[in-house]
Image (cartoon, rainbow, N blue to C red; front, top):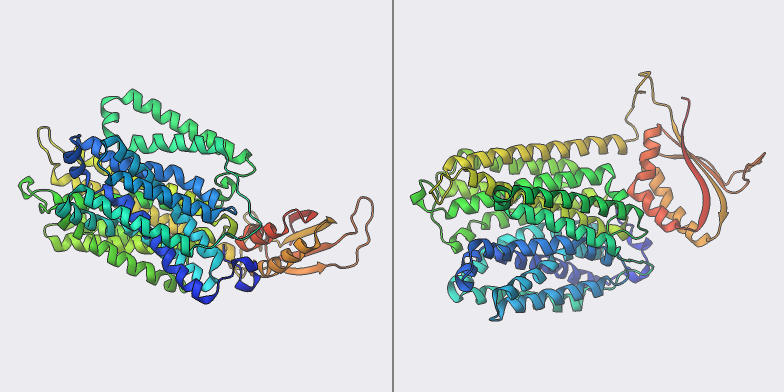
Length: 585
């Protein structure tokens, strides 16, 4: 949703200019830290296996468990962050991350390292809360680019953490690498303590415990099944049973959310075409993006003796991510400016096409390191712009109070998509590995890349479909024809009759927001507070009649983000009979 102008906001949300300037780097830094710390497991898997004398599959859990805890914590933190205790939630979460970072550094058994990594993963849920803070406390001209930047750094954080962790592991061992996480998370906690303001007054947030447990169980099983590829080949029946259980738990969660007065995620809002389309694009696109990242980094580290690859060390392979991080950051900074000329859904489509170009390059040209770096650069460019454009698409139809919750669900979708991309890459490369050989055939990488091209093509089409729908809903001058007669579409009308007005102040706040929302949706007020002669069961209270060019436009205006914010301000201040009707011509 478009944020209300600064003068329309409650006074408690206003920040003096110096505070606003400090808030932006603070929010960006916190989002970058939690993403980078969560990515520390990627380059250290071999070191973990060697240090703790465990198998590589067991060491892989230092990464998997971080994604699991992050996916489970994200919607819960999003709901808590939508309430009055958002600052406390942020500080408590960062404290958990700091404790987890300490556990990863201390000389404790392997199981405590997993506990620490799980605690670090909880921090992934903070990204959406950072967006909520920016949207509430910054003027609109600053909040939109800040939210886009937060989204970008939450992705490119992996590119920052990977080479640093690998370098420290080579110089000082595993504990030194994890020590980096302890240092930066402690700084992030102090930063949040000094910089994050309290949430606006008048909000409430109760966690639907039953829904949280069902969602946690379903996500745990989904991500576990995505990460444990051997389970599908060795114990198919068990894997199928777990998959069915996951589906049932997620269905139970959906039913619980629909019935709950304070759901973790507003499922009805998620069903909005713009939000649903954006989440589908995130899921499919995220799978493809993580797939390409996995393919390039693994290909770069494959010894030349396999007939391909470059045999790079962990640290040097981490440097391959530099084009990804740099171009991703540049794209993220430029995207808010580009959005002034190009709509968000079109940017999603274009970004997906760029990543698709990276797949094509990797599939056709990977004989030298420069080509690999070019493919990684295209990936960073596409991921940066995609991540920066995504919040704008979702928040355009989301009330400010639901920012954290809506973006939390989007990040859960992203986590599942990333896990799926990693799993698909592993399955394809495993299928392309000849019995008795350690590394897959070179052709397996081409096959995986072609599947990635297909995923990004689907994402591109989803973005274009969103753009087409948005254009038809927001342009009041587009002439539409009746689906049956082929003639001009009949007009649409809002008819609103107020039975009682219990809170005039809420009505005044509603009027202030509703008027521009109706104008933006193409509505024209035909009657308001006019004389009424009521007959039979008629009501002689306040009556309003608003005309739109067609019925679809009238419905879209009612569902628009701006009008939804007006309804939130109205709340229970009135009892009214509101209906949308189609005219005869």
